[in-house]
Image 1: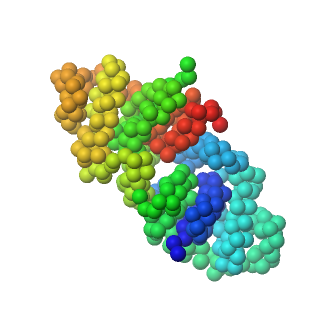
Image 2: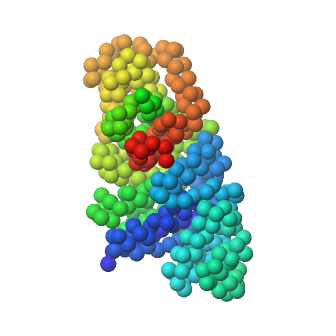
Image 3: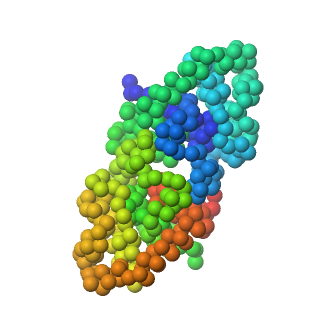
Length: 200
Length: 200
């Protein structure tokens, strides 16, 4: 049984949104499972001395244009959010809690949160917004609300981010396939080659 | 007559090397000319508050691995240079001077310099090394040596870099196609779509 693909993403990352729309289809074409890992890029950015992309002169403007064009290239809808970037702790915690119980439902929630933010321009930073979107998918609101406010889930997310950093993850989307790191939705063609022909 | 593709590259950029090997073939498939622009990324990095990639924690290690894998993905040879990054003023000046006289020969020189650095691990920072490689292509050594030490060619390169920055160029390779900016050798599939189907 080949190893599953580790897929790291930040809910505030537009390229993460694009990857979330396609990674499961690509993996299943090659008989691979995917493990989804929500992370917070703040810690990695701190380690790199980096700032959020929109604040970088020259690159910031380019990236917003590139995201929109990359979405069209992949045939996916995209609308530049009014608020960007945003804190995504609540979204990540909700995903983590749900993913322990039902991975399919958790991915549905992830994609719904991503589309809310990057297609419908809904700011998903607040817990209430995350709970609304989850409720729309039939996820029990009170139970999820309680779950994402515990100290346990906060510690859990922190620990998950530490594991990601220890594995060398520094961006979103980030994939690890049999120990090989791939950064960016633009590396999907290389991942497909790897999955179909093996290490190259 | 469609506009030519502007191709910006730094001789110290491994992704620039990969792009230099393939851009003319891609462009000519679509009946497009390419204008080659050597630049120095130092000025752009300063504007962005960025440091050379190898010095960035986490990302630096990844990038060296990604370059090697991207070369294999494109079927191109690559050897990690012992000295990286290096100053590339001499290479850029030699290219500029030659390009005013013979664009075909200038591209031959550019590819020879890139291969020397990224395949044969030859440090191309010194003028003598650039002149040796140029001489190997039949380019008059004394004439080129004189040309790259004039104040005029130094000012010219500086001005070319300023133009690039003013156009929003901040990395290597960087392409501008009918006003649309594309950053990275990984954007070539998007450029191909643009060339064959028009703006998307």
